[in-house]
Length: 490
Image (cartoon, rainbow, N blue to C red; front, side):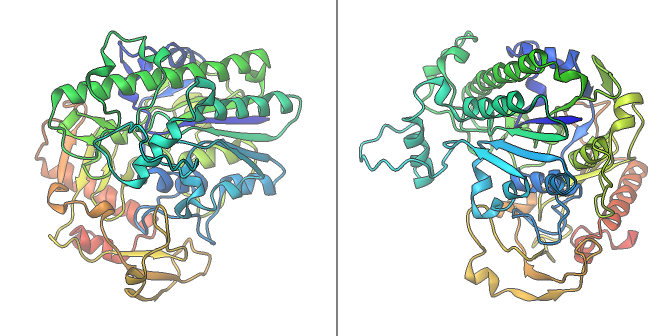
């Protein structure tokens, strides 16, 4: 048995033909849906990039205990468990957060790994030319200047990181087609912003892409309808590029006859707002379905189910358990996600409700119909602490000043294997405004675009009980209940 996970970053389901989009050119996503099971109620857990990848390793929520950071010493890591049980796990990726301090030990959980460089502001090429042409003049940091440098070395499509990553993955498939028991995670940063995409994909659309010298949306309120349209068209062109390389993987599955014995998972970590709800971006705004509800496609050769849809509520945390079960490996007790084998076969539910969110902001709960966003009970968003033995943010360790606020060692949580962790005063992601993270409830059957919050005490009570039950199952820090005003449910 073999398995492939093809993972995109920030892939919007509402921009894909299998989820109802009729204008984005993505025929290979349609082809994929015809060859697999499409999940209609797949949700994120922890946001954004590396918190989601910790979930892909550990099968449990990250965001209740800490923010962005590496794998912890006590974590169960799916690719590491695979390699310890005789399954060769291999990562092919251009997702540059893996080689920053905040993601420094994810790729090393795999038995082997290969990377391609140059996405976004990846500190890749040294070019000290002072008059470099700026790709996004509205952005002025050194990180964004580095992005302009990187693009100078990607004049041809085959120099693009996504093209290189997929080529690496296909080479692995070809070299190992006759071998057994391997897992390939092929992961590209696209279609994450900035939307740097070659002309051949822009030509698929009747749109003047030269209207704005801007392909990098900020994480701010969307205040320009024409610019929102521009971002949408760029995102569509980049999705078309992703579709092109998805097609190469599907072609190789056909050519090598891998469908008979190879699981294929195509997924993402989260979506992105392109002007919907008057926002651009993710992380700072409420996690509407455009962000929180994700595309997910799975082919399981044991069941042969294809061109079918599933309505059961599933989450990112279910994917590591699904892979371990597929290879007949025992699932660790601390892995709370559920294997999806029977859901793929018969649409058997694996949960009543699920949590999702980002550290220090709203805690969200869904049962597949209702989405309940529970905001902080106090304007100061307190109390809030991070629990970690790996105190790092995205690109570096915690600042010395932050470490002055270590309050001591926390007694072990249920999943820390007897280890105590540092207890450090926390902060909301990116200094977000607590006032916009209010408590709201949506009925997504009656209001699929989440435009009209409802007031229904009975439903809110039910969702609060789901939330508290799940937080307890995940051994949430006790102060999270106080921060959210949920003490009466304990």
